[in-house]
Image 1 (tube, rainbow, N blue to C red):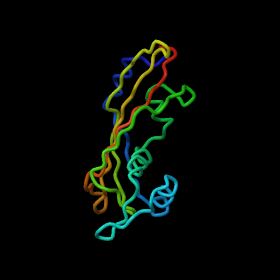
Image 2 (cartoon, helix red, strand yellow):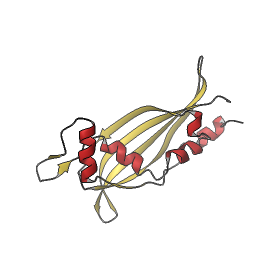
Image 3 (cartoon, rainbow, N blue to C red):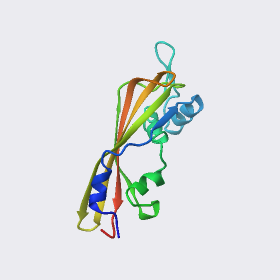
Image 4 (cartoon, rainbow, N blue to C red):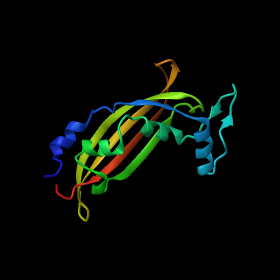
Length: 157
């Protein structure tokens, strides 16, 4: 039997374990080079600013579970064909090269839909916040929010 709609609703509000992510200088340079952007630039005060894509990389890299584990929360595997849906990043301030960020978040929405050609599918929304680690493990400034969705085909729903 497939993943029941009642089980889907029960996942809303489930939190990711979370974790931390440090923007390493070599990775900041490599990402900029990969997307044909300027290398990390110095801003007033001497901090190097990382490419905005690091918000998503940090969020997904430190959400505290693997993609396979996330898929399992919804009774799916990679073989079922889940696909990335939408994405939105809100940057509240630039990410800094060498800085560490605490990542937290979880499932914020889940809805079953039926397409005429595709059949049943679930759209799951999840959100993650990045807070700069000010000193030690104390959370600092809210740096970014990443919202994403995954579409899970439900061939047996």
